[in-house]
Amino acid sequence: MAKVLCVLYDDPVNGMPKQYARDDVPEITHYHDGQTAPTPKAIDFTPGELLGSVSGELGLRKYLESQGHTLVVTSDKDGPNSTFERELADAEVVIS
Image (cartoon, rainbow, N blue to C red):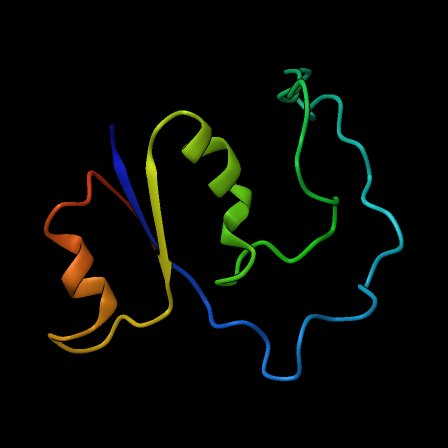
């Protein structure tokens, strides 16, 4: 199975926001040109939740691990001894 390496932002210094800029996230059913939007069967996160930092893991861990893949998430990317450099050698997918 694949090893996926994600290099993401650190979590917010003061913790995750207690409230977000929007109370709700609009539902997009189609694009301006008429093409339909993706329609996932389920999601395992709350819409509006911060997923682009280390603890959010882009919302990928549960899905990838259920498929037998390995997910490594880090914000440590600088220097030859960084987590990114150590994990890069055998990663099949890199998301940065």
